[in-house]
Length: 413
Image 1 (cartoon, one colour):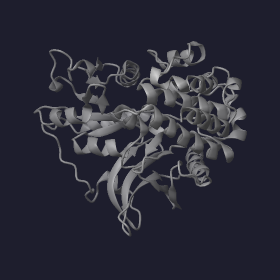
Image 2 (cartoon, rainbow, N blue to C red):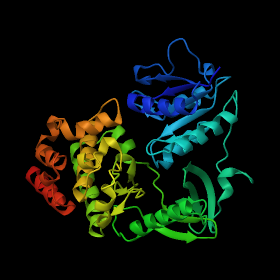
Image 3 (cartoon, rainbow, N blue to C red):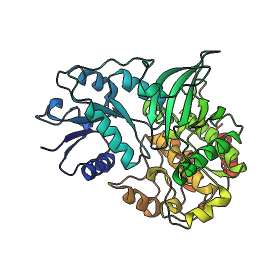
Image 4 (cartoon, rainbow, N blue to C red):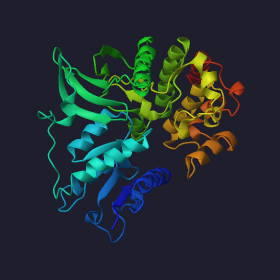
């Protein structure tokens, strides 16, 4: 009998995407897809013990996957559970691990091989019967502690990708928590050299920017077999979490202004972000936000050369029509993504949704622009200009966007 997977998530398109990857790797497997938003954590007439591995979203509109995870792991015969978390949200990842998750799967870009490795690792642990305790600080020999950094204490591993790993650490001199992104190997072969160059480029792109709404970079280090970046830690998680809690019109407009300011700063140094989404906007304790994850960012002068290949970069829900079709993109593509985020802050929904990524890309170019809620109607014209199908109809720069934002705020008093 093949492996039995259960995917518990309220996003149908994501369940289909994940199920496709699982069945293509394990051709004899069975994938059961379940939407928990109706109130039932598990499909009717099933038990968690009926499956070999569970994928559990960290939250849905009517429930908390973290709370459900704690309950599941107390059941005898519970299989390994991989908790699906927001990309880069250290707070949620930590809570999932504390609740007993055998591993975490950050939603967003993920290589098929990395997913397969993650699944095999979870399956190899077998059925625990009860949740396994997880130490906040790793024991000697723990895989998560393979990377050590002088002057820092290890707290936990946050994520592992195909190229880099991310750790939460604490500076010994002031006990401040930081995030350390590590390129685990720097081999001499060509592929490793390209990974290393991209890693350094990400550091160079961010370190060239000094703006309160861009992630703070503290240090870069290079050794014989690894490189690392030390950066700011965000205890409150990302904008996706805050959207779920509710954001009023005035708060959304102010957050939009902050994000536009960050875009203005990165565009001025010749950088396109190309992957703006709530998961890449982090929330600070003082109420401000900061852009992170410049892994897809490119210098503007390189954008034409790159897009000629027809490659598609970004996340479909937030992707401009020109990005979605592999066409040349400039700063106005980032402004489009910001417009999508603005809509989501005001409605908790995405303006364009479909059953497949290509369906979403099609709607970005062809579907009518939706209306904002009645309370946000004064912002409708600005929103429509941000998500205009033709880049020529959008604000020409983040500076212009900020000016128009302040104009609307001024009229509203």
